[in-house]
Length: 68
Image (tube, rainbow, N blue to C red; front, side, top):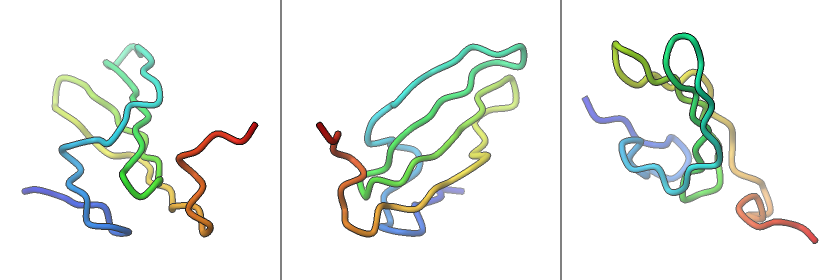
């Protein structure tokens, strides 16, 4: 089954950008950003990929830009 971002419809199988990766005892935790700017936390282990949390895009659309 293919899942999509509920905010913009981007396929979850194609992360727009990887924010960070962290090795864990169970495998890997990966933070990814969608094309709309929402962030997901994924656990990757022996059983595959599981999205454990998903944020919302910024209301002003600035979530994918760094403020300086």
